[in-house]
Image 1 (cartoon, helix red, strand yellow):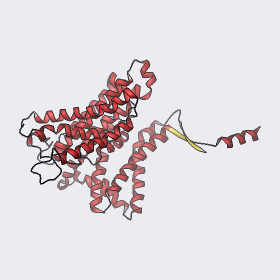
Image 2 (cartoon, one colour; image 1 turned 180 degrees about the horizontal axis):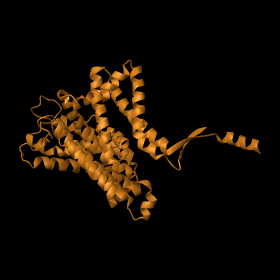
Image 3 (cartoon, one colour; image 1 turned 45 degrees about the horizontal axis):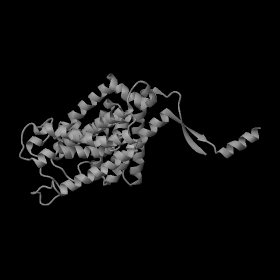
Image 4 (cartoon, helix red, strand yellow; image 1 turned 135 degrees about the vertical axis):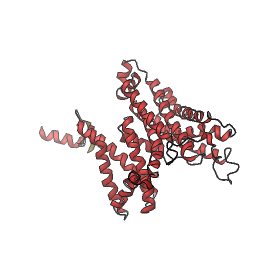
Length: 372
């Protein structure tokens, strides 16, 4: 006996709209069970995950938490918006974490290698260089797929580790801060290389969050109101129909990967220049991989991704609060985030497909002979 998924001739529009909320509800139930098995109070754990980080909404003394929410959400939204373009076009970019890292490295060339160059033009150049770096790195798996039909999932994923090891080598070697007491980090960025805060007097939320909102609106407009967006969707849903329409699949591979890589690179340099202020061996807690969850939780809709990014950023802050308050490990935090992706994909799959149990061929033959 085997299990097959059979596409439903029609699926419920209501359940399609409610799917993310059903997934979140199932995640809360599974999370409560997980915390109970770990010997923690599930209600207390879920409170620290989803309520405690939002106390800044009604308590001015905790207003900083909302700024931290924006700081965490900015890279998730930026990367996920780019991934949505890739995924809708049926190009599976799993290496956004590497493009994030390369964007941070390339964008940091000016403040690290030319610290005496201090002018207002430095920051715009850093942001532009970060986008170019991320786009160029994403074009590698795009070229391999378009030219050799290589599996982009494997190539983009493997390039993540190349980027991370390259960053580690830089900050421990040629870019190490000469006055940094031998710590593996670059010199601190000067004031012209720091992304300014949106509300400078009340917190550290920087302009990266504004970039994320602008990117989401721009991507939504492109996908829903332009010919290029129509091309993305047609080639993603039916490559054969796209070829009949005269659309180039190979050009779409490059377009999708370059857009995705550019936004991931922008997220990388925004994180480094806005939240960290220097390069270190680790500059991301896994934003590039978590953004995959955000993209699917937002149903690959750039506007939905904004809400999904805030939800997952909330889980990051809540995970940190839970680690401090109830003593769970960071592995539990990652498992909880994995549950979100699992239930989102499971709900979407069961809405569009039904499960069918198929008997073994021998059993079928015996049944036919009996009927005869």
